[in-house]
Image 1: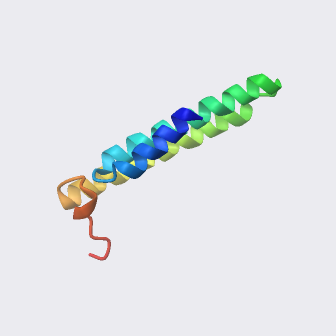
Image 2: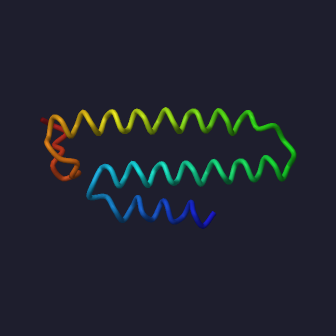
Length: 87
């Protein structure tokens, strides 16, 4: 639970660069996956749900990196303040 809280704190406090935000989101997903696996092993359940969660988080990460590459190509940097959504 501590790692999840640290990941959320980094996400909230380091909102200047898009890459920092994506890395902190992946850290949050990894800590949530580890908590899910710990709970699964503790209760003696199957690990299929955790594998589906891991696949979904990998897809989320790849979509985030693709969007970041597209935005950096169009705007020139990964600063959040340089992204004008209305243009």
